[in-house]
Image (cartoon, rainbow, N blue to C red; front, side, top):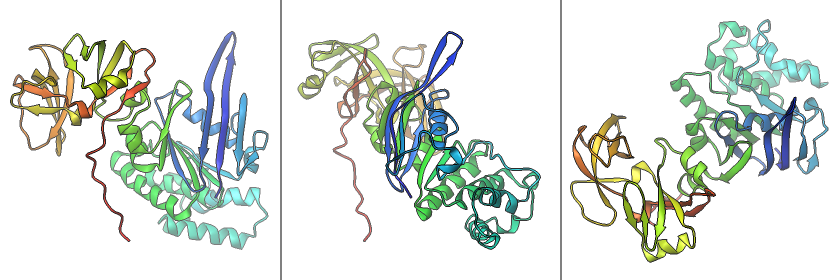
Length: 379
């Protein structure tokens, strides 16, 4: 187990006259035994960051420390870091046992008996002991993924790096493997950095998540903090499915004025805006209330455009004008029935709204969590 620290780490690619900044001054500390998920859209720099930690990419600027020791110039095979790739990268001519033992045979002086013992114990842990004599071509995708994990586990590294390891699996197997990976990480207690573009993996697996965009770190927080208390517009829009609803508004006294509606602010909410003149109002779909009628400052007439049944809930796409484009998405109980073309009232409670500076994207106000229920842990 180990601590891992990135101190203003930067990666620049120079292509002819073009200077491409793939990773831009990222500073990040991962605690001993922590499971950190790095998430962001394709091309945001998350895999490049991981490859720099592994020693597979050079660092343009900054420092990477493992247990306080700078490892910038340490060869990848000497970093005591194990990486699991998206493609599994198994040797097709070797058996499962051969794939799992190869790294130890090449990089250590460990006796064959101890290597065999480690491989056997790890195979039992991953429920692939009966596959040790098979070759990768005889295995399913899920079994190949377990072998790739096993190859990393037998090394007993200080840090695991995982680069979208579940992306080649079908939805049901991905869900199963998410749970197994969490169990394994807790059991092994190894510091883990897990890269993904999948929000579900980020929200369900990580102790904390680090959100990247265009090579820059946007926020590091627990999954619930990132969801309920986003640091900026990008995080608010990226985390959550369906995405947060956004409306650009002009501040006019105690009201926000927009193209679709005006929204009155309480004195407390108005103080968070301060002297910003243009804000973006955001609200999560599940916080939009669909009511039969209403006439408050936060109630707005709308028409149901499309209803998307999801089973336990329905995503309702609403227009503020008849025959208009979708302006607002609400998530309601799956047992509640609404029809396309039905007039409704959409209520946007002030306690649930977020406000952002439209120009900078910085958060001004996050929704209130005062009503959130806390469950006492078992003793």
